[in-house]
Length: 115
Figure 1 (cartoon, rainbow, N blue to C red):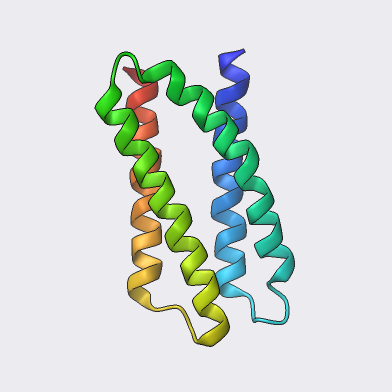
Figure 2: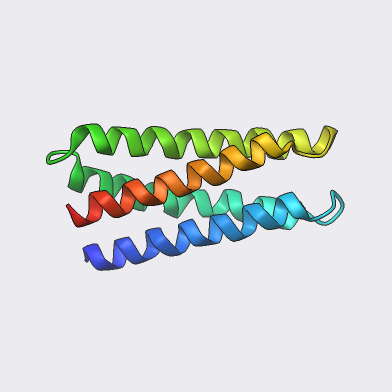
C-alpha cells in the first residue's frame, strides 16, 4: 500500500515539474491548460504527501516539518510566479528559487523515505 502511495506521490511531483515548467515557458495565450492541470495535480500530491508525512513524523519530526515547509514555500512561490507572469516575464531569481525548492523537497523526501 505504501509503495503505491509513494508511486503516486513521485509521479505527481514529476507532473507538477513538467506542467509548471510548461506554464512558465508557454505564451500567455496558451498556458491556461498547463496552469489548470498543475493546480489539479496539487490535490493528489498533497494527499499522498500528508500520508507519507504521518509515516515519518514520529521518527523524524524536524525533517518532516522542514519538508512540509519547503513544499508549501515551493507551491506559494510557484503561484506567485504564475500570477506575476500576467504582468511581466518571471524573473530569474524566482525561477531559480522554484528549482532549488523543488530539488530540496525531493532531497528531503528521499532522505525521509530511506531513514
